[in-house]
Length: 285
Image (cartoon, rainbow, N blue to C red; front, side, top):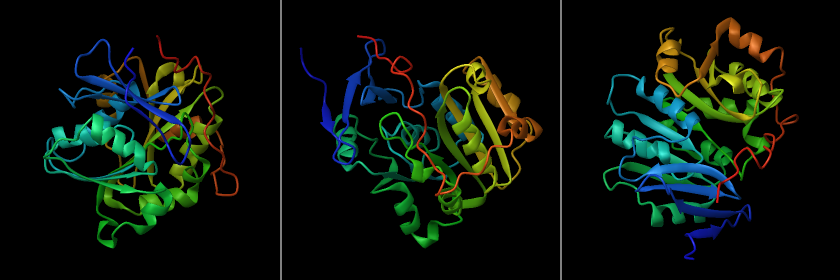
């Protein structure tokens, strides 16, 4: 049997593998330490596979005018699913991708080449350190900041604190939006802490997820949406109508109830996201 392209990542020691999607020709999945992290359809980069990535795509579609180029910063590369999506749906967008594992980027670029027309610059290094070193002209001009940082199946503690978020959101334009991928399960202590922390640095926050996940019934991904500009009230029903289903969104009083008094996370109290049971992301042979 032919082995799939892979590399042992120098920083984490985890193995990253690119596997073809057996059901969708032209599609591939990036798997790190047995956990699926990205799905890319090379023939149609607008086709988003993972449900939380679809929710992020739905938010991206509502930024500014449809098809209008944006400035985006992605903390965490994976297989660059969303940079590809933005390049396809908003041609001319300027994008920066920050990734610690340079050998992961090399694997992805070799096996899943980026479109030649895409204006995507990759910066190597720890997301928190690189954010501090980004060009001064970028600060205060970013329309979209995506935080999707994982080492294997967990988000490292140092990119979950209020100190990190303060630095990260300083990149945003006055109406810029931050999207954070949070993985958690019952009783959602980590997700509530992240929502509380993000709400302490931006004026408006909403949480989007599959209904059972947001109710704390099972492990999954919650997308936090934050901005210093008011999130239009018509976003939530439009986002939910866009799928995937079943879906739930909370904002305003509902978000405060969701947070339920969770403390703001600091560098002193930060912990990595919980490790899901292996069955959560079990790959079928």
